[in-house]
Length: 248
Image 1 (tube, rainbow, N blue to C red):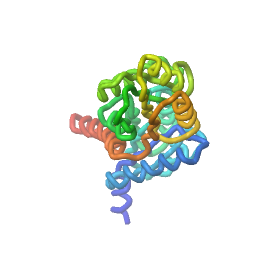
Image 2: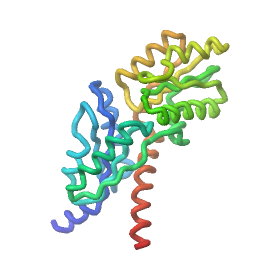
Image 3: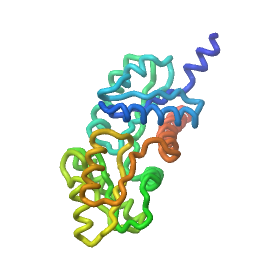
Image 4: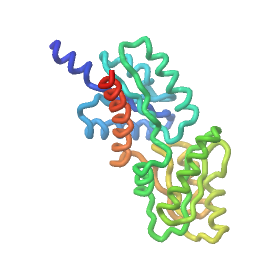
């Protein structure tokens, strides 16, 4: 029994931290991603948590863990408010727990794995332009990373590209599609820079179709690229900790 408790304490915990949504499809997508990471990396204890709307909250999950090392993985595509403010707050509050907590980097911006996941969801045959649709943010730097991701997507596909946002400043999906059509594109596709479905994704998708988009990709959901990307974020943290221990 004692050895089992010791093994549990030595087993790294991975806590996926999603934004949360009133739409139950979002939580279902997050739980599915947690299960996929758990299958891929059975040596980790993998849990899902939510900053808003859904439960459990990250701190509740951390408090339920045995004394161990925990890595928070923000299921965020930009380092906006939630990544800069909410996650550090969770780590500060977790200081009273017998768990060593470190936050991994957010999943974006445009890593090759993330771009591959975006492309896999988008039917690219016959397209002559592409829009990357994102949730949006008032953080200028975070919004610029979406624009950079849209440019990287365009280079990868060899197509004119643009970014759009479902909230905050910046063009909406319908505007971005229309601008590309006005520039001569006739078959504009919209790629999804959304991890899970919800109101903002639905709003962007509907506006894009109304403006004449011929294809609108589904949210990224669960796919091999995202599982590998989450694992890479965790390994970067755990590997850094191992290097510090070895150097001590």
